[in-house]
Figure 1 (cartoon, rainbow, N blue to C red):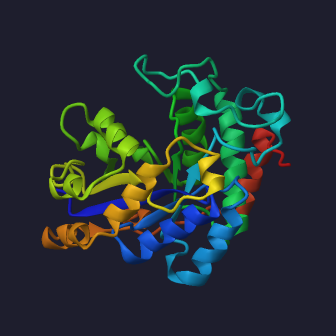
Figure 2: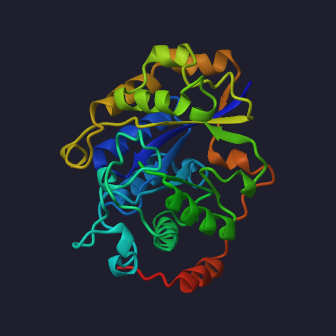
Length: 295
C-alpha cells in the first residue's frame, strides 16, 4: 500500500485565472505540487503569484510541465522544425501521430525528432530557472508522450540528474503514475476521469488505485483551477477543471488521505538524499552541445 502520493495540479501558468485556482487548490486542498508551463504568457504571473502567496512552495512544490503542443516554443523555432508550423507555433496535439492506434487525441502525422525535443526541453529548463530562480527537480509532459518525446526528454534529464516521467533509472524505483496503479485498463480509465473531472466518489472509492499501488509514491495528475477566456481559447478541457478544483478542495477528500495515513508529498520525495541541482555551467554546456538557441 502506498503511504505517499503526489497530487499534481497540472497546467499552472496556462492562464491567469486558472493559475489562481490551481494555487488555491495547493493552499486549501489536497493538491501537493504544481506543474508549471513556462512558455506561455501567463507563466510569469503564475510564478509571481505563487511566490507572493506561498513562498514556501518554492522550489519543492513546483515542477516543469514540458509543453510541446500549445503556444510558441522557448527555443528558436528554426532550430526545432519538427515541432512547429510555418508560423513558428507548436503543432496542436490533434496533429500529432500517437503510438497507440486507439489514441483518440493524436490522430495526425506529426512525429518529432528526439533532438528537437531535447533542444526545447533544455530551453524550457533554463526558462524555468529564469522564472523561479532554481532548476526543476521533476519534469513531465503535457498532453503527449510519444516515443521520441520520451527519448528526447530522458536524454536531457539523465544528463542533468533531474527526475522525469518514466525514468526510474535516475533515482530509486519508488514512484509511478496512477495509471500503473489502477485496475485493468488503468491509463484509459485515468484519461476518462481527466476528461470529465474527478469526483469526490472517485477518491473515496480509490478509483486511482492509490491504496493498491505497489510503489511507495503514487502520482495523480489533475487540473484544478478557474476558467477565463484565455483558457477557453486554448484548450477543449474546460469544465472538468472546475470539477477537479471543487473535488480536490472538498474536506471529504482531504480527510480520506488523513484517515488512511496517506501523506501528500512533493516530487522532492523521490530524492532520498536530497535533490542535487545541476550547475548552470552544465546546463549551458549541454545547450551548446545540442545547438540550443532561444527567441
